[in-house]
Image (cartoon, rainbow, N blue to C red):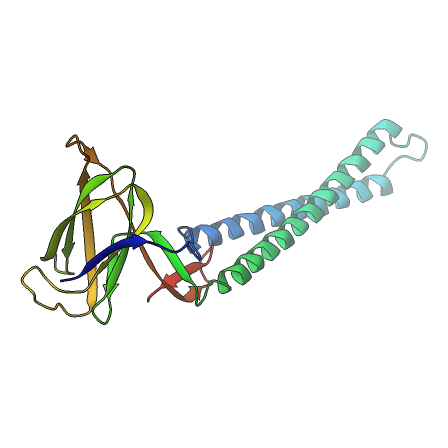
Length: 220
């Protein structure tokens, strides 16, 4: 059984958790409804204004101040419509930029928070973060929850420390390729518990552009 505990290369790419597509659809529908309502008010106002001008008493025309206020309101509503259209364009450009940026991650190695890694060709790697020198106990379980390997190691403080498992159990059994979950606990020299963070790394093989923001897929 061979395990290693060495420094890891710098992270090449990461992604945040995606927002739900249903939320984006709901926001778009709300924006469309609001624009429709403003457009309706705009047309109603225009109709009322022109009708008022057509039916005013030539001997007693509209008050200049009131007429000016109405024109200002008219211009304000028109400007709001144009602003909504411009905001829609800006949102569309931002989404396009996100998609373009996400596509550049394809083929690159990414490190993200997680504890389940893929054992491929007898090798699986996790990244451990240990805030202080400690004795770290590692336990690895298969997809059914069965513990297949345990081990204890003296680890120096540091982040992104690679722990590679060769797929062999404590009894020498070579476990098949698949998904395996690592659990790590640690204690310092005074026997105090130390929190250990776990991350996984892999190659970004695809991007789901239907999500907002786009969702990266790592090792499938």
